[in-house]
Length: 304
Length: 263
Image 1 (cartoon, each protein chain N blue to C red):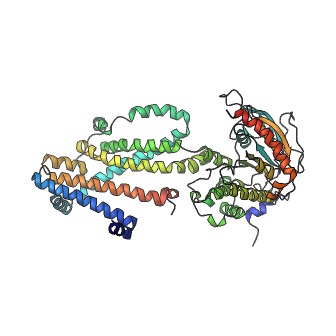
Image 2 (cartoon, one colour):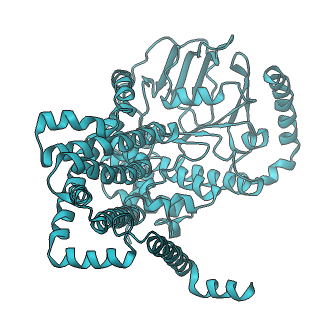
């Protein structure tokens, strides 16, 4: 049995580019134009860091114009290819707004977004998005939901790609079901499979496990890490759960509210693959306390 | 108590529905029979049995089939005109803020005008016969279809739009693969209501503006004091309308929005 369509292209992740135009999971866009100046953002080095960041925010401000403070205020952030970054903060700190900027759903009021150092102007299949909930198309079967992206891009064998990804998230047996008949955890796994189906170099996740019960959430976190370990996309993961952020990420970006800014960036040293055992380690507990102290102050600002 | 429950249990949910419906109709027919006997006037209210005999006569001489065909053609003609204009227009307006601003006030002004008020214009413009009947049924069916399709298009979820865009959907693909299917359940509701409205309107139109069809037959029979024929016309309209709307329901569950009825 030959390797499947999807599995073949996964090798683009690990560097062996097979030349097919859609397979380029991690291949940077060719002309590396540097637009704008290397601004005040402290370009945090990452162990897997390459010369240019995969995603970069350059002094981004998002002002809805309705409140006294902008939702996001002058934020600069660089994310390396293959890095797993968690955006953590209390509700109202603008972390989801920031994710929408990354995704291209919302244009910043001021500042610029770069994907592979090219201006990122709108939603594209190069940034897969996993939403909090209810984002599967209820009028399509599970496999058709996952095949949606490949179909839009005109990829060969969209259903084959979809089936492989459903196998990857352990849902090969429900591919013909309607999304409404699946549990919340299963729906989110389909959502992840769908976001991965266009082979995006970047995966943006907006509190994807926020609506799940604690046990399911813990299983989903392990599942996500195992998928990430195999495909190594660049991940931006929005959450308000401190432990989730530390468990998953290489780097936790803690945000402050009113206005939304980056309060602190914390490197997470735990080796991979990780298991939930690290919750008991002293280093984990210290980082959790450090982050909790920041968050407590910030949460109080918007809690009125 | 327990005996009755076990009887209904033994025939299942569908059986129960059919059984209760049949009982309801039987009770209604009994009351009708009693009422017509106590009135004792074939003009005011002939009994069901007389109506049934009249049915036999009208079926035998083929005139009922002719009238039914004329009315059905008009209903479908008007309904097709209405749905083929109302659905695209509604989705377009739900999609475009500018078009919505331009057209919605106009719709709000035209909508309260009852279909029957269009009849004089329709006759002036198109004369007597089929065209004004198409026009009136189309007007009647248009608004429920349009309003439901618009509500369906407007209730599109941001998550679905964003998901589709982040998966590479172009604006046209967005309209076709996300907006239309997302609005379909509401569109089907609109079609069902629209078809009912079309039936009501076709009779109105035929009473005044046509020389065939069930409405025309009812009108002529009234002038001839043949109340049994009037009742035949009325009950045929009721039966046909119910069957057609039921068919839309089946079509809806099997073909159009099966995800709403997972089996």
